[in-house]
Length: 136
Image (cartoon, rainbow, N blue to C red; front, side):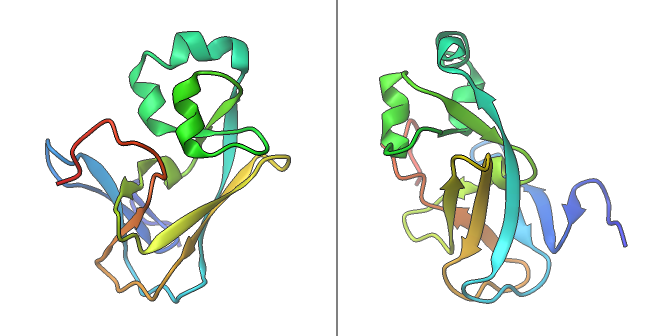
């Protein structure tokens, strides 16, 4: 059964207000280790990074090269990727309840629960990089 356009597969997009913006909330319980979402990604080629990085899109991308970490986005070199689905709307937390795993060659990114997540709880990840905003 399909939900509204902001809800699917036990997840819902929520607007937390002007300071925090949108995020993802569980609409049902999620167990530790459970796959929350598998998202295909769109690649931003290395040559396009100079055009994309100065835009708001930079705040939604993942580094997409083997042997790199998210902090490497600030080098503005190599491919980046934007996750489709709800993954790019996950907010940061230093105490996240989910983690992400890049599958570079498969052009997919998985989000997995680090602990049990209750219905109504926001799903968060650690961005694993120097933040461009104050998370408090």
